[in-house]
Image 1 (tube, helix red, strand yellow):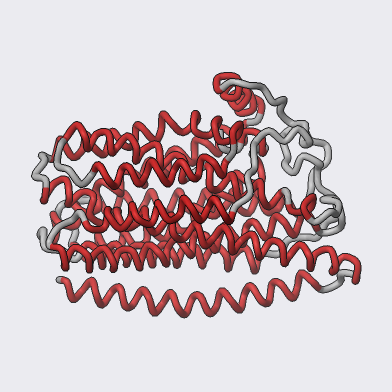
Image 2 (image 1 turned 45 degrees about the vertical axis):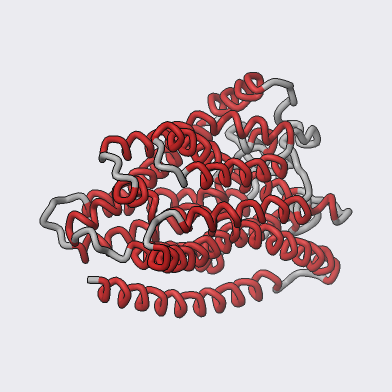
Amino acid sequence: MAGFFEIQLGVLASFCGIAMIFERYSLKTGSENRTAGRNDEDEIHLGGLSKASDSLAMRYLGIYAIVMGSDWLQGPYVYSLYREQYRFTERQVAILFVTGFIAAGTSGPFVGVWADQHGRKKLCRIFCLTYAGSCLVIQQPFFPLLLVGRLLGGISTAILFSVFESWLVAAYQGLPAALAFSSTAPGVKDAISKALSRTMGHASLVNGIVAAVAGIVANWIVEQTSGFRGPFMLSGALLVLTFFIIGTQWDENYGTGASSGTVAVAGGELTKLKQAIGLVRREPAYLVLGFTQTCFEGSMYLFVFLWVPSLQEAGGTSLPLGYIFSAFMISMMLGSIVYTTIVATATVPETTALPANGHTNGHSNHRNPVHDTLVVLHAKLAALICGFAALLFAYSASGETLSIERRFWAFCAFEACVGMYYPVMGMLRGSLVPNEVRAT
């Protein structure tokens, strides 16, 4: 059975390589089409913006790769560490997982408020410390201490999947001011939106690459140490390293930009939460966005808990979990490549104007064709992804007689949906949610 998974990993990696070549061709063709018809002055502005956005993308993606690598090192063996090495019951393992999920859900709005008010860079550095602390306490098979570790891990997860993205979006939106030219110049808003979309897609691709590598590395560490603790130790060391890199490579940004004028800044976490809730009540699109994110990411959390016992039920306990995990992550890479290819080849009309606040709402009288077309495209993709993922999840749980091969491929397809989901939802949040409450 181990040979089967190694072969499938190789097949997926080869297919992913072919898809990456096609993606590069699509991006090059799309770029040539977009530059046709612009005058020299526009090209000067957009050329400078392109260089600045590429530099920003490199600074973000390098740190993002390390952070996600440290997270994915833990992925294949959390369940096995609790269940097989520490010998906790299935109920106790479930309690540990649920504790982390609850901590992530309940702390999310508060860490977002704190990030918006006190700085996203600062909270990203705090994430490195809290998650490293989680990796430290998991080394001891003491149930109350492991609960503390899950609490730290849940809070860290809330930061990882909200604040890092908020920092990136705000940094992109601040590029015109940093380059000392108007954000309403021809093509600027369009260029920023597409650069952000491209970086989101590349982030999902980088995420898949480092996750696949992390799975193989974690598998090797477990084989060398005959235990499941080693990957967590390496993860903690990477997080400490990232703490210092963020301090030197990133600039601070906040959610209190008064220049947009969309939300009045007020002190206090509860006040900030009320402002965010008021926005959701006034604009149904925010409610739909939040509901979609809740449902899809809820299924992701279920998958995290169930994929190991589900495969073990069909194929026994001696499975190469690291290789299987790497196959899932390569599938996620394929999903991100599909996303960036769709966006690169989609026909979007050019425009020269965008609302000053950088987002639209149901009461705006100044709609932007590029912005609206991109939002509609991403909304349709989100609907397709959620529907297809639901069918795959239902199929993988259709019965005990389902073979391990079919379960494996259903899980791979689900992970491909995840690879598309992250950049799609990231782009929707970046386009629709005001900067002042984005992390909240």
